Structure formats: structure tokens, C-alpha cells
Length: 458
Image 1 (cartoon, rainbow, N blue to C red):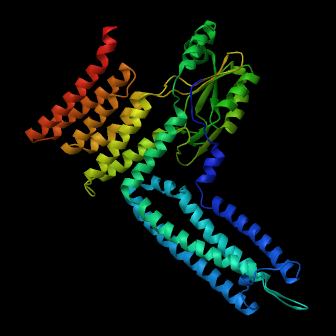
Image 2 (cartoon, rainbow, N blue to C red; image 1 turned 90 degrees about the horizontal axis):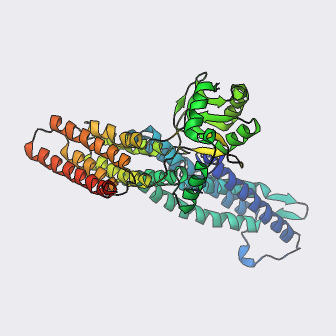
Image 3 (cartoon, one colour; image 1 turned 180 degrees about the horizontal axis):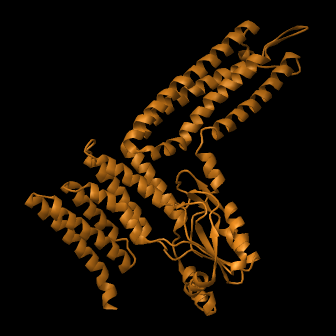
């Protein structure tokens, strides 16, 4: 089988992109810790156990003052720090684009920082409420107060970490590198690396009856299949391929999906076809459960979204208001890295079979040429008359050539290079700059010719 990185569930991804899940978990942990320390304090108060003398924290009045001071300081820091953070992220989103905000929200460091602060506040309030009066004397939770003081020191360390973390995370190179890491992860998830077992599996599929070959089955579905309509509008965020394949097997049907994650679907419009037609209604109900739609795109099953994020930063940097060519070139460097990674992956159509080898689900295919166009078209158009960026585009295409695995991939890169050269002839007025651009294009052309030469001799 193809080696594919395991995909996390869309529910887990949705929890990651919130500011409440991790803090809630840490608050629960804080409550559990308090219950443990409170139980020990009660046992010590009734002389069932003996606490060390260094845990003594004075009388009930001093204990209240300490806990009130801790709780007040923590909640004040939380309000001030995160207010400043939201302001900084708002300003950063104006430069990076509004879609970058989700990257900051799903940052684990930000979530843990908020959770540690709030958990300390909750722990201190609970400890404060536990100070009470018993018939034979005041109850002072010495251990709980000491733990609250220790948590205050932990919060101080977390605060220093958070200031450094947020200052580093809004720097443009770090933002771009973070998106590139997400792109690599999405590529590993969506596009498998073929090994010897894949070749054996492909040979086995060739022995299936003609009806079970995807190309002929697609013709049958197109001619005689029933149409499945979308239940609601939105960006397709997640598709439960395995779930749909099981449902198709139960109904002895074959499903052909028209869209893949990242596409926008409209309620009432066709999203799939089913053969035989009689299974269309049941599949429509199943799709409503297996498809997750939302108001925005995510990286789940959609690596092109990360490419679009890098392109958005690049074209914003190339706008006359910003005019930051170095940022655009940094984006191009990471885009070439991502495309190089994609070039060595399996682009075969997503086909799911049951345990008998019969095709049950055919997903929407990926196009390498469309990915190349998404990566470079908008940047090329925004870089008209900017030789430095144009040359970097050609160099990026040249870097991807070495990772390509087919002549069709190299044709897509050459086509993009030809459009860059054509645009340059119209927009670059300086002859020396144009000569440099032509020189880099010729280098790209030579690299492609060298890669095609071995295949041409066979």
C-alpha cells in the first residue's frame, strides 16, 4: 500500500482551532489538583497526617491575602497580555491576510499560556473559598496556598515564554516558515509515497474485469448514474472517504465525487454521481454526514490552501502600498520547496475498493498543472516590471524541475516559465534586466531538456 501519513479526525482539527479546548482541559486539571491538596490539608487539620513545617503559611487572614493577591494579579495579567496580543495579531493580519489569524488561534503555545493562567486563577479562587471556620479553630489550607504560590512562579515563566513566543510568531519569516511546515504536513497526508508494494497492487488491479477499471467505470457512472445534490453551501473541509466506501458497499453501488476539500459547494447543486441510480437518495443522506462544510477552508485534506496562503502574503508584499520584494521572494523559496515535495508523490486518482477488489468510491482527482498555476500565476501577474521577483520565479521553477517525476510535470513548469518570459518582454523596459531574465529562462529550459533526455532515449 502507499505510505500515507495518518490523517487526524476533523473533530480533533476543529478543537485545535479554538481558544477554549486546551484552557478547559487545564482548568479541569487545576480543579483535580486542588481536590487532592484540599484533601491532604483537611487530613492535616484533623492531625491525621503531619505536614512539613516549611509549608506553614500563617493564619487564615494572611492566607486569604496571599490567595487574593495571586488571583487578582493573574486575572489582570491575562486581560492585559491577551488584549495586547489581539491588537498585535490584528495589525499582523492586515499585513499577512485575514486567513493568517487561524494559524495564530491554533498555535498550541498561545492556548497553553491562556490555559495555565486561567487554571491558576481557578485554583487560587477554590483555595480561597476553602478557608473557613471549624468549631475547634480556623481551617487554613497550607498545602493549597503553597501550591498556589508555586503556580505563580510557573505563570511568571510562562509569561516570559509567551512574550518571546508571540514576538517571534508575528515576524514575517516565521509566519511563512510555519505555513510551509503546514504545507509539508498536508502533502504527507494527502499524497502518498509509492513503494514496491504499490506496483504489485497496481498490477493486481490490471487483472480485474474491464468493468472494474476506473476509466470504464467512470463512463458508466457518467452515462447511467444518479445525481446527488449538496445539502448545504460552504467550503468542503473534510470528506469521510472510508465511511462513504463502506456505505457504497452496503448498497452495492459506486460513488463518484465531483468535488474535493477546498472547493466551494452550493446547496442544491450536484456534488456526486451514483451507480445505480436507485441508490442516489441513500447516498445523499450519507454524504450529508460524511461531508463537513464550513465558512472557510482548512488544511485538512487541502494542501492547496497552504499554497494559497503563501501566495496571498507574496502578492500583498508586491502591492504598491507595501513594495516588499524580499518577502515575496521568501514566499517563492518556500513555494518551490513545497512543489518539489509534491512532485515526487502519487497523483493517481483516489480510488477505494472493498475487500473483494470492487471499486466503491472514486474521489475528485488532483491536477499538478493546476497546483503549479495556483502557486505562480498571481505572483507572476503582480510582479510585472519587477526583474528581481521575476528572476526568482524562474529560479524557483528551475529548483522544482529536479524533483519532477514525469514529462507532464516538466511541461507544466515550462509553460509557467514561458508565461513569465512573455510577461517580462512587455513589462521590463531595461535591456540588461531583460537579458538577465532571458538567461534564467534559458537555464530553466536546459534543466528541463536534460531531465527529458534520458526518457527520450528509451
